[in-house]
Length: 403
Image (tube, rainbow, N blue to C red; front, top):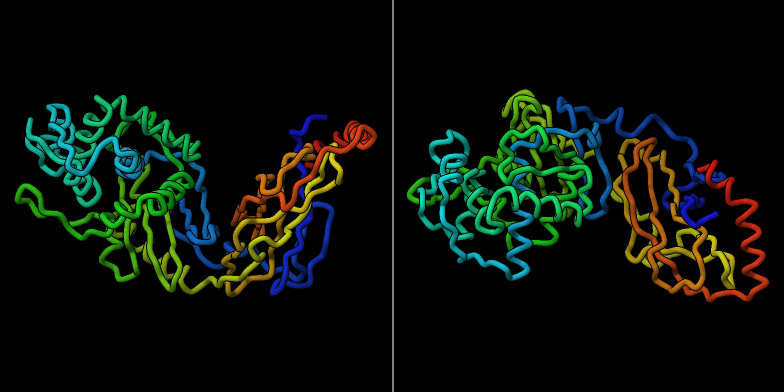
């Protein structure tokens, strides 16, 4: 057999989680109650996803992989490309781009949509365009940036898709920079939340613009379209969108009690309902969860089998402390697996990424954390390699059937 079969190891979670029953592939805490998310919250949104940013814990999930028409939420990806270009030094905030007729007609004053009212053939700085896109959701600002950076909006969309793949946003397809309707343009809430978290972590020097309440440009005053900024819930971004097909959607981020929360909602009936449901899910999360430590940084989490080495297994660890947010009212149904492609083939260096630790609350996968080899394993002698080869030949097929 090849080393492409997945093996799941038993993981024993430490205090304060007790009464652990070991199984062949699963560890489950005894005495569990009903599913954590079923009982605690529901939303009018057709699709929803909330994640606590520091631990990566999924707090609420409702069809987050469904592909939707993103509307103006596409602008999160537009800004990621712009920020990436700025960070790479290819452009700067003073760079000037000219307003083309396409940008003016499609996204400017004649369009009747969200606009910063850039005048035809005028020059606008990248710094002003960023504020126009983020604060005012300006379609003309998006197109001006796209044409200025890539030469055309089509070429810019290619850059968006390339960056999305680099970031692991594998479900989404981008066709334009504005989110104006196109049947080929689709995203998932999973990708939108991942994108929002990435932007905050990777571009702190630009992220503050998402919390900017208003922007006056060309003597025109406009307020930020994100309703969360005025609801006193600790919001600092991100954006909203609407299409007839997907309804009203939002990606929002807040900080509260030393934690950071990111949510994406879609399929709501009105802008009022969108604001109410977003506020409600944040306020629920603030009260419904508590943080517990699962493993210390560098602590052994499990073991992976080794093929052809001086040892038959190698301990696995995480490089940072692993914490988890669990429901205050229902913290007694946890299970975890280490999943890796195995057996690992010697020689193995210490610190090699070997797989992931996956943690569930009930049937919901709430956290994934990379795990690494804790020590090196050298190549074994010919006799040891021969024995391992025979064991793999005779037992490897059972792993494929089982897992």
